[in-house]
Length: 258
Ligand SMILES: O=C(O)[C@H](O)C(=O)CO
Ligand SMILES: [Mg+2]
Image 1 (cartoon, rainbow, N blue to C red):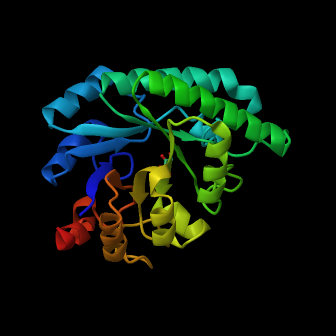
Image 2: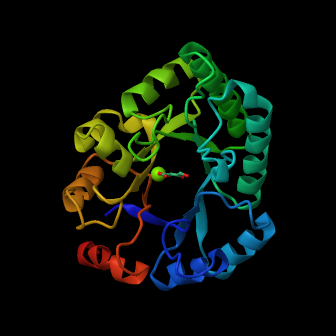
């Protein structure tokens, strides 16, 4: 069975973030992720993790202003200094929280720059991240996001990610393979996971369509989880879905496979 973590930005949202750690612990989760932890001081999060005997396994670097529709700024040529300051802040949080993985979001391609400059900016920013994070013993992860939910998102499929990693040319970079986004963009999940397992550092999932819990859509999660075990995947597999019912009720599938 996969080593599960739960994303506290999308599950247990019935209660404020500070109470989600305990809610997750009550359901048996000892590993959690937070997309953007920055509204809380790192010391407060560290206290909550200790109190609930949990490990933080993933956080995202700051990704611009969501109120303005921004979903990452790593490919924005005019935001490089701001992006890199955000990465420094993410590394400080990760060090305080003993978190070994930081996820980077490319963002939506800015309309006022040509494709080559956008790609070059992203590659140079990833080179910066890979080295800064290697210095801090942190794994750089990069996530591809589907363009139905976020039209224009620059990094949107696994082959594009692997080709970019070759150009980044640093060993400290892996794909955060989100099953939900990749089912929408390319399908062929088990084959892709098996073929590129050594370039995949973290997995998240939700069913398609709807981005809800397993058994609400078209994916056969029993087969996917079994295949991950069979191929020897040893990383984290994280619940990152919008529960279609209460979070606790949405975990029925987990009890069936346990
Ligand atoms: O939406 C997702 O899949 C991400 O993992 C994320 O962190 C976006 O903020
Ligand atoms: Mg994701």
